[in-house]
Image 1 (tube, helix red, strand yellow):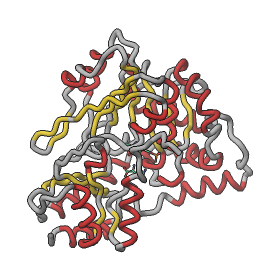
Image 2 (cartoon, protein in one colour; image 1 turned 180 degrees about the vertical axis):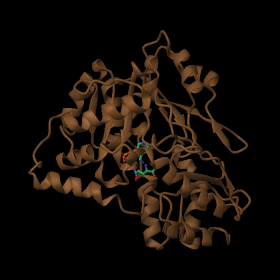
Image 3 (tube, rainbow, N blue to C red; image 1 turned 90 degrees about the vertical axis):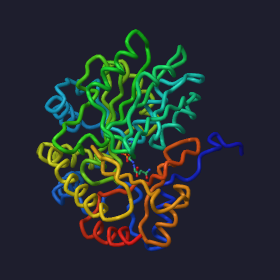
Image 4 (cartoon, rainbow, N blue to C red; image 1 turned 60 degrees about the vertical axis):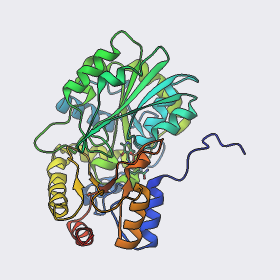
Length: 380
Ligand code: PMP
Ligand code: GLN
């Protein structure tokens, strides 16, 4: 059959995880923790299952979870989202992204995607009949950033949507309030909408606070804000996330959501709702990951890799140009098969070939895993 997505292959994350398994390599590629989640969270899910919370939940998600999210969003970002009309539980951030795009993008609409970009954005736009307009982050001396003046040149009458992601996968860049001020200036007076992918919102380092689009009323009123419990509670396999959006957007979002998944599994929602009552469960995450970041960076400082700064996420990008001239995919494959440490080529986050000699490691791993990986990486 004629493919609707002719350019799409198996995702780089699945590919590199398979290669890691084949070579019994330490997998610092695909982004997921190799440690357990808190047993209390599992107890809460168990409790829900035993209490027979096993049938369809309400279409937008169970009320206690939407309430807990509303409370968190108010406490951290000072924003009031209506529990009934502005918060929807999704099957991970991936479904939230796809459904948001299907909700607003019509054939021929342009969507500005900032590269390097998470790999689900562009196929979702293409399935909606939209046209991805690619914009590259600037890279100067190992520091990625967004030049908003340059980006403004991509905006025209066909622009329907812009997708931003902070903290940013894979670069670890976090956007500041000033970035959002510039973005707001660009969007004022247009009907362009925004998807803000904030799945790493609770992993921001060096004492900084995550700046959420929720705390910017002017942007929030045109935004889908997306997060994921998989990242926050070390349960990427559960696939539970959520979308915050103003009532009018949520109303349309749910029309698609109800035929996309209809609902998201019930016991996990109850478990998460109970667990979220303890705020420390998310406020302590930055310190937890900062320790891992620092341990990993410290170890790598003895290697020939050049470290890029990491302000948020659980990813560390490194420049390997002192070691090899190979393409990023070749180098990451070699590192997996011959050195025994899997990584992700940053080129996988670009549509066009872009070779910056960068690969991404995930440091959401036990200290012993990081130690073993470092032993191998510093020998190269
Ligand atoms: N957005 C970004 C930037 C991500 O890194 C991920 C996780 N890989 C997702 C979305 C998808 O999250 P989920 O696993 O909840 O679908
Ligand atoms: N978000 C994860 C990453 O960037 C992987 C998700 C996936 O495998 N699709 O590594």
